[in-house]
Length: 322
Image (cartoon, rainbow, N blue to C red; front, side):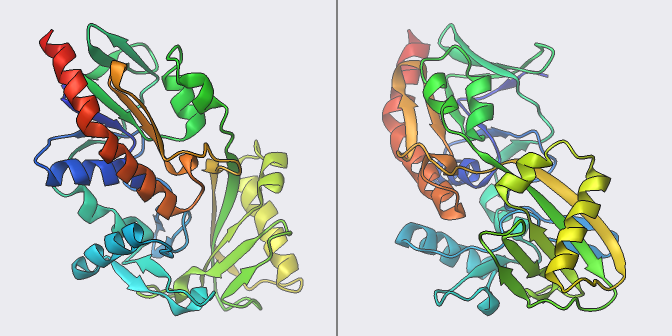
């Protein structure tokens, strides 16, 4: 079925949903497409049997007024709560019951199509035409806001003048371990070691609203690249071995183990501007990789995309009318 819209948003992560929520508040009817089954991108929660893991972003720490305002707006919904254990002095927040819950209120009233794989976006006859892996037509609209990771965006927009600039932004991968134990490992609730193979280890079950000895460990980019093509089961064992070393050579019985490979976890050298806009073709490209790697960067990029929309939408409407 062909999806028709005035504004298409590619990506249901924090940037895409920031744009979608802003348009909805202004009376717009954006349509969001995402290849995943869930919402939030790296604001992700994995559930398996009785276990739950935040296997993407671990917490949110506002540094500027825009992001702080977003978190304040989410508090009445019960989707966010402070987490003291994150340390570093400034307040940190997590989603309830998981990190993915933070974005659900942002998607209220927004038309979202999940499990949609977009392989190409081409401009023709004053419309963006989105197609799938086999060239099948998926959606069309005069305005396209692309909020997926930079390497994916460059591939989808191949042939557009902005594609080379987008493709120049490299993004680091990250293997993430999710493990549940029969007893507490000999580790602090949070362990940061920036120069190690596991720079972040946390007792996920110790966050507000969680329970159990559930742990998340995120591998360094260099280690991940060296083991990028490991089958998932082998990655679990390799990551558990690293965790065992950090725990003094012993881990309690493993009740559950899994791993997730984030191919595009963060941008070590971001674009340096909050978004890219091409009014002549009705295109905005945005994402955390424009500014950095934090969730706050995703929101700031989304807000910049919203600010760029009025002249772009007007140009697109004029082209459609013509």
